[in-house]
Image (cartoon, rainbow, N blue to C red; front, side, top):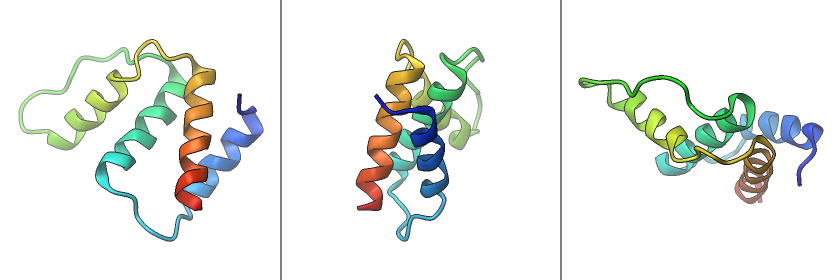
Length: 84
């Protein structure tokens, strides 16, 4: 399992990636980060034509039930993979 320090370092490294990840990977990073920092989503799904926030909500919702530690570990692994 990743430590809190490794998670914080991965968060900072994710901001300096040389190549922009594909949208699905960005959504995965977002969802893992939110799950690791806030836990299960507690808001209603956005409606209407707010496609960006709907996609973000859906991605985070897909992490429901994952522990904060599991999300941190997955986040660190994904950033490490993206950073090479």
